[in-house]
Length: 425
View (cartoon, rainbow, N blue to C red):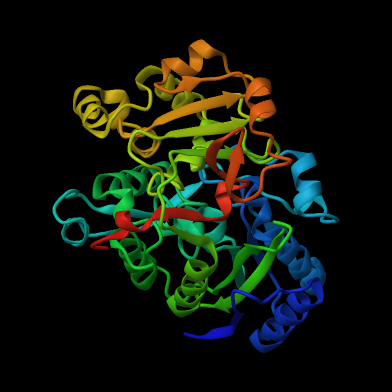
């Protein structure tokens, strides 16, 4: 078990040549490989620089990199245009689609007693450790899991074995993992590398993945003085140590602590990256610990046109809406459709302002009736963009016609919290 490469700081900037040389050094150390699979993220993680790293891996291994499977989880399959932009120059014939409902195998179960202990009695059932069957049974002699470590609403910190067990996992694993995070309390998890759900996944890796040639390539992404994403850290290894090192840097780079709780937060959602509230609600997840009681979150979301990225999940979001946790938990008890789709139920909890603040969504294609039907406020996108112009606002505090607001240009890059909400963690 080794960490092969670990370098980064809040001020470090990796060039493409730096990334190329780091990968070359590690791959040379690993020795010759004949059949390699890469598991990078999908387009919702465009700024992870996993695309560039996958291109560099293909540059090194050539025809020996035979399979590339974006770790979609339940997200949309990537379009040819997205593949071209994120994985420039790679033949589309190498890409494989992850079908989370049909193409998975269960390699073991984390015992109910362990899950129960980790969740303080909230969940008392085994967690199925699942992955795409091509990952387990494809005969590869190197499995490259590539992605970004950043604060995350379900896992505390994104990536590492989440990329395997959730990104290429099955419905049962995804459903229960999301519900575990929601039931335990995402504000108790976000920004923590060591938490109950991560320990459950680590149990699965330690007990059921021995002998698999897994190597993790993890980035930490920050923003430069012009708010352009840059790679601040690169960590490569085959065990938890590289993830913990990356998480430590990510907290320094991506976690903003505020001394003042904003009464209004305005968030811009890049239309190329955010097409659904399933992903777009990062605007809520990542700011909920910052916003003041009675405050307002304004979400400028020109690309958002649907709620869920799967038809059934979209249907459930429309049916139940983003209500308070007690309301959603009651709905789960009373309705089989939510019981059979716990990831959707967890998402509804994650996206709820819990009556503590309001969410004003300004979508590109959803109507007022649709937005208000799920429990949010609606505002016209063009009108709100004129008032809060994302091209002229700066990251952080702004004065807009005498109104003090806090602006975030990409919520996927971080986590924001008022210091009082971190007490006791």
